[in-house]
Image 1 (cartoon, rainbow, N blue to C red):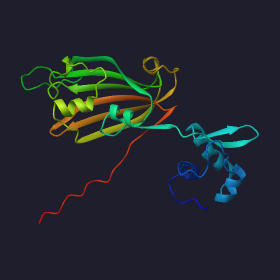
Image 2 (cartoon, rainbow, N blue to C red; image 1 turned 135 degrees about the vertical axis):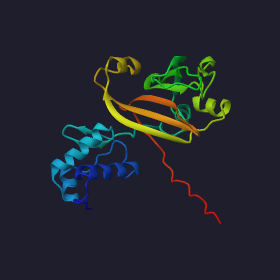
Image 3 (cartoon, rainbow, N blue to C red; image 1 turned 135 degrees about the horizontal axis):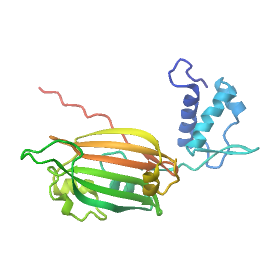
Image 4 (cartoon, rainbow, N blue to C red; image 1 turned 90 degrees about the vertical axis):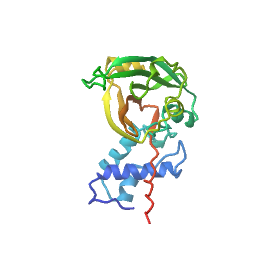
Length: 249
């Protein structure tokens, strides 16, 4: 078994990816022990410190567990939620087959946009604020803040959004489907605001996703800020090949 020493990807990451692929493929059963650091170092022709870096990464990700004096063992794979597809949070939670719930925390509330932009009549642009929290088995796992363009979604602030799928509402009531999305990912340490939203300790690492959705001619008509706890769940995205444009005869 060989790792690519010429690759820009560090050797420990290559090894961690290989072990993770083997875990996903079911090569090792849950609670079984993986080969020792000494054995892995010999198998891949690398040093034990590199092996330790790889297994450390998988331990932090919840895929492996160390037991003093016994070795490194396989953990049960964390539940995955396909959060970042354009189908929306409600659909992702429903598809996850977990005991989930969505609660409306704030809104819908009509507010002035955080920009100096104006609409055609010269008035300041307006946005509609919505905040929601998703729970799994009663524990919060993500917190969402949405800003809808009030010109694209008129009257949204008057709707009852409790237990409502926003993506279904946009499709069925406004006849719009997202045509493009720009998503930015970063990791932050929870400050006071985040600890209250997700009920975590200060300093907890959280995944933050900023999303801008375009609906046809309406660019950035919906802006979302999503905070995700990653200590209990994996948040994934299903990617599909781009559709081929038919040739014009």
